[in-house]
Amino acid sequence: MREIENVIICGIGAIGAIYANKINEYDSEKLKVLVDPARLEKYTKNPKVFNGKPLNLNYILPDNKDFKADLIIIATKFDGLQDTIKNIENFVKEDTIIISLLNGIISEEIISKKYGWKHTLISYFIGHSAMREGNQITHDGKGTIVYGIKDPTKTDIEDIHIVKNYFDKVGIDYKIPDDMLHAYWLKYMLNVSSNQPSSILGLTFGQMQTNKKFMEFSKKIMQEVQAIAKAEGVKNTETMIDEALDVFYKMIPEGKTSMLQDIEAKRKTEVDMFAGTIIELGKKHNIPTPYNMVMKDMVEVIQEENQR
Image (cartoon, rainbow, N blue to C red):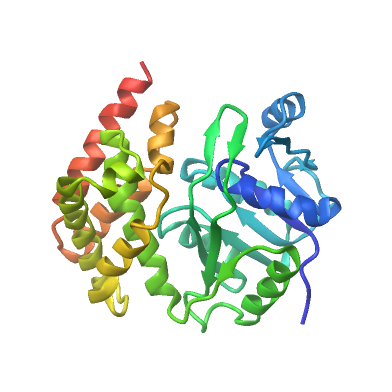
């Protein structure tokens, strides 16, 4: 069985920085962080600070042809995905494994259009949100990469074990569910039902958890996701809302969703990946999605105001 040595991380925001820091501490020589020239200058002059320590990383530009990756971890925002897919081209070899930690359920589909499904795993991050303020990133260490295969007839199942061996060596927490597709949609349900309304209302996890009216609203959003997941062939959808609530109530009360952090920092949000995807799938399956339609409009109103 082959082993992972050379790794590229794309994106060192709230999630990417967690794993850039972890892998950098394990083997800084074989980790590269992919950046464009503007970010290279920015990060060199003003390095990211992770939990109070400068994050000194080895950066690589897209035109470099001297490095081939065994593993590529994509942790950009959704609006940067297409550029990332193009920019990793020089570093992908025949057996490069690609993991996307983007929120949502469509990033791997987009990646596979260029690089295929043979070495593309489906995955997501679950845990306490990292907090960003300027170049400062803080995280309490509570986080797990959940990963697996969407279709064993298309993806090399050995890749699961290759990544597992690497994560064990580095000390990265992970989970490999028996039903990855169910787990994948469960995380999506959490994102759609908490990220979006929290960004509109400005609520922390604790405020959401203790607000009865909010929780009633959140469950209605979950029901839209549940209906579409069932139509998409996800198994055991009847348990998804209870499972999502169990995870949601374990989030730290003072934490903020990534979308609320984006709104507060006047960054573009991932509403297209959340409500936008649900709305399109609703049309596909003739399932009404009124809550997501309203949230998409409201988030876009806030975004437009933030850009003034």
